Image 1 (cartoon, rainbow, N blue to C red):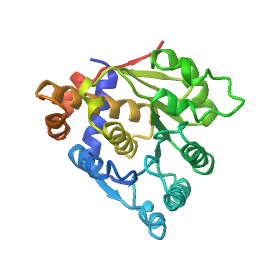
Image 2 (spheres, one colour):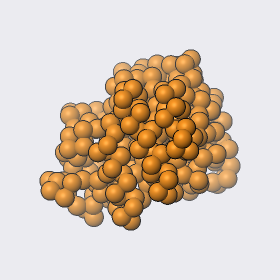
Image 3 (cartoon, rainbow, N blue to C red):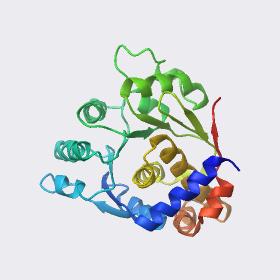
Image 4 (cartoon, rainbow, N blue to C red):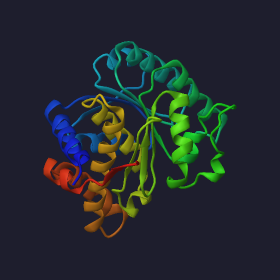
Amino acid sequence: MSSFGQICAENLEKVRARKPLIHNITNFVVMNSTANVLLAAGASPVMAHAANEVEEMAGFAGALVLNIGTLTDIWVESMLLAGRKCTELKTPIVLDPVGSGATALRTITAKRIIEETSVSVIRGNASEILSLRNTDSKTKGVDSLHSVDEAAEAAKALAIELGTTLAITGPVDLVTDGQRVLRVANGHPLMSYVTGTGCAATSVIGAFAAVDDDTVTATATALAYYGLAGEKAGAMSNGPGSFMVNLLDALYNLTPEDVKAGSKISADA
């Protein structure tokens, strides 16, 4: 059991005690499941997308989660409005660049959010995150970075370049701000068979970032808690359908003592 387990337990206790409002501008596919995950974790979700209310809503939020999975021009405007408001208020912003690198709209939007707002954490897979690099970046190309293990040095360089904390998720998650590197080994294979599990992980990071000013430990402990819930759910599930139900129950039922003992967070030397 590491000191990271203690931080994980403390962060979970804070989320449940404070019930931070997490403002999500997210995609159509995951709105319901993401809201349920946040409720099960102990946070308070809101899904507000209208351009004429997002700044006001952002003013109440403990964190803002921006997910570009189903973009429209109107949603891009809303994301930037909310993001600028949270930047002004110094409220944490967590970006999930879903499919960045696949189309120009997604890549350009993710880069605009990074350039025009103060993004605290970016969570995605290696390809999504490395698509955000500048054209003159010294990082390796996406094709050579399919595993989290191989991505460590490039991720450190990119975190410094973007001025944020990066979370590259996979069988073992990697979290870095360019100086520190933490790895999170919690999780279950069934998580990849249910749509929206990665998007929900991003929102849990938002909840933990609302109560922990250190974005590296907030991100790593959120992923450990979420991954541990996945382990508990997977052990009692017959497939993806029962897994999603059991995941919500596990998120709700995990205690601070459970995550203190079960979190698998390690730091690179």
